[in-house]
Length: 382
Image 1 (cartoon, rainbow, N blue to C red):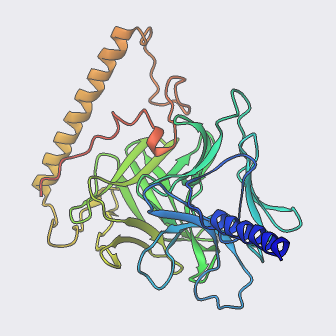
Image 2 (image 1 turned 120 degrees about the vertical axis):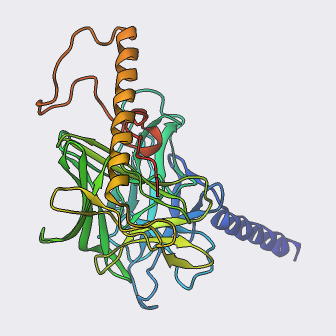
Image 3 (image 1 turned 180 degrees about the vertical axis):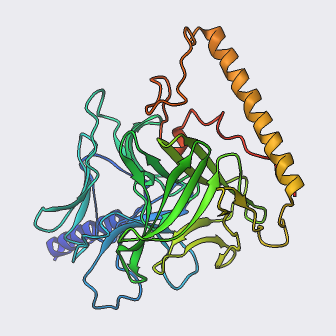
């Protein structure tokens, strides 16, 4: 009798420890560890959660499961998914599938047969490997790194249909890189849909964000001038731009001191929507800058009650102030470089098709060190 009770206690202890392991919340996965079933990663501040999910609306009989990131704990009838890893390669059973990080920093999603349906294809070739981890950050970015400034992959480089604050769209003709948003196929199907949103350069000081259909037909587009900052004064939204000739363009979506949740979403109908959280998801009425035939921006107002259409006088004043600011900044930069001895000889790059060797960008938003000069915008005078 005692032997039977002793064995029962061991079984009970084992089951309790197993349940604790499943429900424990962590923001990181380390080499050799697996994420499977109902296990999830949760960001430090409990804002984002990562794990397997089956899209709402697909029915209880759906056998398609995806690895994704969503807002944790929002009182909404459906989970708000912001990123999907295996959007075009679902798995049929999350409990026999698993996510695993290897010792070199490559993250892969495996099925029950051991077949990898998705992988980051990343690794650390040099240096120590004992501190590698995949971490779900507070801003919703999922990063494989071994230190604060040393990472091999991040989800912000591979957006799906959503642009979170500190995420970005990018076009780099030199490196052949284009980071775009792609809509879901349906509200219950995260597979690649029929629409995409991408940024391209038009001239040395003008970028365009285009909404495209899969066949390449331009459905609609709006232009962005690098010397203009777009702000919504209710939710404190900002856009930052970098443009270098026809070689490089970059759009960063962010918001300042606001703690409101926000996201830019390319929905299944091809509409790019700015959504803010106010007890529920609401569409923020923030009209984009529309291009006239000269490529100039037409201010259509922000939320109607905060700013209106600027007249020609204010436009001229803003242009003069903006150009003056940029000229002064460039002069200061050149003086500093001259004092450091970096400008040993002058060279005209205005007609060059390639960037000077000293001109470089580090793409991830929170690691960019070359933005100080280019993040200068016209003041809002309305």
